[in-house]
Length: 123
Image 1: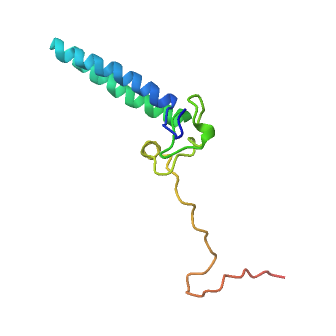
Image 2: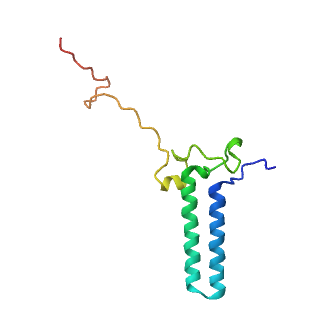
Image 3: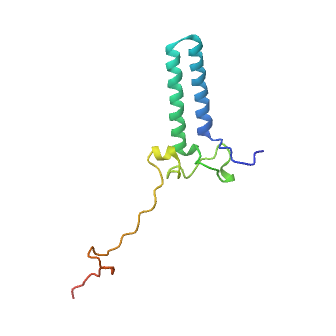
């Protein structure tokens, strides 16, 4: 039994399986001196990257770093993937990077007066 998070995820295993098939096809293309097999092998390897990225964004991957023990099993989906993971290149590429919260605005006038503006009421 493992005592640390090895990062085994559906996205990781699926991407690895597709990339292995693409690498095998690429290797066969080199041995057979077949340009179509080389191109097909490169295409399958590129597809493996896209499939892995899609599965990561769908919640079947993992954020960078260790996860809580409850999320270690292979079939556990990452609930935080929709908002994006901090320091995650995949999430940043998809536009899901967590950004700092916007700074609160004040109603201070631009005249340099540090006191907040007070609305006058007619009465």
